[in-house]
Structure formats: structure tokens, C-alpha cells
Amino acid sequence: MRGPDGTTWFVRLPDGSGHCGDYKYAVVDRADPAEWAGLRRRAPALLSARQWESLELALDGVADDTWEGDALAKSGLCESADLWAGLIPFGAVTLLAGPPKAGKSSVLRGLYRAAAGEESGEYLGRPVLRARFLVETEEPPAAWAGFDAANVRVRFRRGDPVGTHQEWAEYVRQIAALADAHRCDVIVLDTFTRVRGLDENNAKAVTRAIAPLRDLVLRDLTVLLIHHTGRSGSVRGSTALEGAADEAITIDLVTDDPADTRRTLGHRGRVQPNCRLEYHRTPSGLLLPGHPPAGAAGKVGGAKGGAKGGAAGLTFAARGG
Image 1: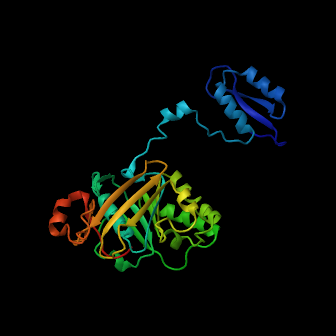
Image 2: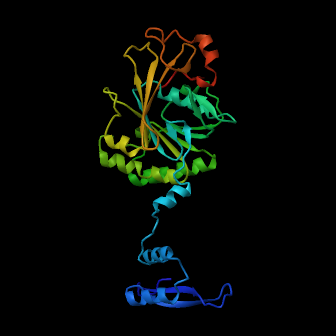
Image 3: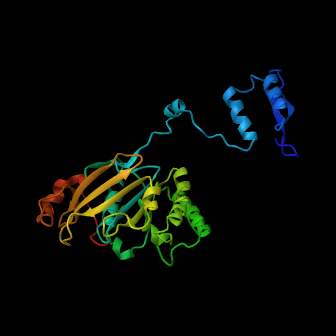
């Protein structure tokens, strides 16, 4: 307990009688090294050397939340699970970007369905764990026609994007409360800059906007930000957006032909190694792994392709980007 002068501390010590709850108080001037050393000499067994060091830092107003390397390896803190194996880890901020109307929302809806089962599923040839999603979308309700997965809560974005940093912090607090209330594991902001109004070319503004989302990760939530790529195929705006995310996934067109439904999904990240995933859409609206021969992308699959796809391919609404 800190004394009125701000440097004197009243430290509660066992009185040595062995009875639980019997204490005496030592008055220690933290600013006087001799008194602090004297306390450690009088009660060396009260705390371990490591605990004494942490207490000393705490009395100086410093929270010692560092980890020793060997203890960190044994703690289990570094262990992680993937929502979508090798692409989207739980407990991280992931950026998913692609050209407008290239099928970002379609990929997401397939993922939602794959994560809706009682057991682990599979999507585009990769395992998916069960999860519940809270989605804030700029899409109109009509874009969700026919979607019926019960593990998704949808909020349709209306009005202007969130403006000031204070308003954004309050928004993040509210969406965290909604996720808790509906037992959601993943928060999806589609699109990020439609929810948070900012200059996407301003690195400082982008970095500041990402910071409150880290609070969601600390609450064991996973954050998925949807964004656009530019004509070059790179994430649009400042590189700070891709740099601030833990994982970055981009969807690339194989050709500029609107009838070509082949796509390549590229992944770069901190948690998972870089990888690429090829997939295509069949005429029946099924996403399947791999690329059929050029010119056949719109013909391969059909009813037979849908039957053979099983859990690896999932239907999606043809609307939306």
C-alpha cells in the first residue's frame, strides 16, 4: 500500500508465527535503497528472487509482464489453432483483400457454412474448425438471399462510417459486447473502410484504427477485415494496413475475362507460413479447389462437380464481391 508521500510503502509480511492470517506491516521508503535492501534481508523467504524483482518493479509503477524464453515455451501461450488451416488462425487479425466483385463475400459464405457443422469440416481442401461469426456488412440484405447457416449473426451497415477515434473505440467496445452476447468467436468487418471511415493512404490513421482491434484479440476473439486490392493486385492504400494485420490473404484473378471463374488465393503472415491456394467456381455455384484448363472454368463441375466436391467445395450466393 502506497503511503501519502508517494514513496513510502506499507508492505504486509507474515509475522513468523505460522498462523494463517497473522501479519505485521513493514514501512519501507522505496526511494531509500538501504531500507529496501533491509526489508529483503529481514524477510528473504517471503518471496523468491524473481518475485522480489517483480515487486520492486511494481512499486515503481512498472507492470512486469515479461516472459523468460524457457517458461514461455512451456506455458502453452504460443499454441494456436486455425479457423481455416494454414490461412486464418484463431486469436489474430486477418486481412482478406481482393478486387471489387471478385468473390470475397462468396469465399466467406462458403467458410461460414464449413464452420457450421457439429464437427470439423473442410473447405477448398483445407480443414475448418467450428465457429460462430458476427458479420458487419455493407451489402444489402438481398445479397444474402438463400443463405441459411445458423452460426452467423449479420448486421447490415447503415449510415456513415465511424468517424473519430473516440467513436471508433466505443464501436469496438459495443461489437465486443455483441460478440459476447451471441457467443461469437469471429468478428468480420466487410469492408473495413466502410465501417471505419479513414484515409486508407494515411499510415498513421490506419495504424491507429487497428490498435483497438487488438483489444478484441485479447478477449479471445478473432478479427477478419475485408478490403480491396488495387489494379496492381496489391492491398489498396497504405502498406500499414497489411503490416498491422497478423495475416494477409489476397484473392487474384487468373485472367481479366469476366467469364473466367478461376481464382488464386495468396497468404502471407506471421503465424502461418506463406502459401497459395487455387480454386474455381462451377456453373452450379460451387467453389472447388484447383484450376481446370483455361476456357473450361465455366464448364467444369456442373451437377457432377457439385456431387463430387463433397465438403471440399461449398455453394455460395453468386451475388456480391
